[in-house]
Amino acid sequence: MRYAVLSDIHANLEALRAVLADCRGEVDGAVCLGDLVGYGADPIPCIELLAERAVALVAGNHEYGVTGKLALGWFNSYARAAAAWTAEQLDVDHRAYLGSLALTALVAEATLVHASPSRPDEWEYLITAEEGFDAFSAFDTRLCFIGHSHRPAYWSLGATGPVWGSGAFDIALESGRRYLVNVGSVGQPRDRDPRACYAIWDRTARRITIRRVTYDVAEARRKIIAAGLPRLLADRLENGT
Ligand code: ZN
Image 1 (tube, helix red, strand yellow):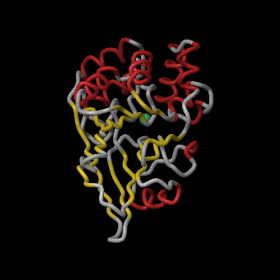
Image 2 (tube, protein in one colour):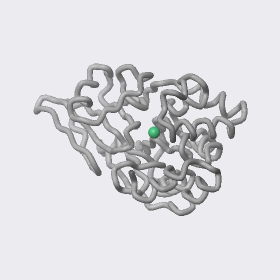
Image 3 (cartoon, protein in one colour):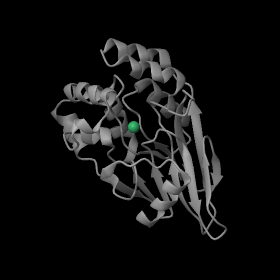
Image 4 (cartoon, helix red, strand yellow):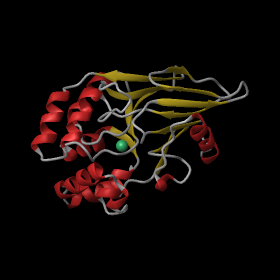
């Protein structure tokens, strides 16, 4: 059994299509860790593709923002402008769908959550070694997949001591160890690599592998500018920041 694990799509249809094409025929399903919308120009096609393809989805802070569950004052000015624009694009059905997403979900031996398994609705960033290791007491499954920082990373605890790594990785899941894995961002990578980022979770081979996929950045940028969204949201796609 193999899953594609996707997070932080951010209404970037070009990146989402490229990722789905990259794993087509290789995976049994996709799971999504939230932030389907916000920043990009294609919220509705991205919601529809993910609703159709994903076997499990959880809400991110952008779903909470556009459905009124999180005050937009929480967001920085670019995210706030994008959330307000996105909220205008959504019809009643798409808004209700995003509003129906839970904060956590379970798929096999994995917990799915957007930001942190401890207090998922406080949208904490887990970046450092310490921040990741501190979160292990907040989930009781063997694996926990997260997004939110838009940077791939993993933390592992077991009898032979803690292990932490960031950037691209390909890890073998050892018995007796637990793992917290950030799968990076499909639609707005922030690790200075502009390619779309996601993970393949191979339950049979017991591996988790980060994949990077080239997509049509120019087209995604063009649509963001044409929609009147902040120009910075287009420009940051070019250099992955
Ligand atoms: Zn995000």
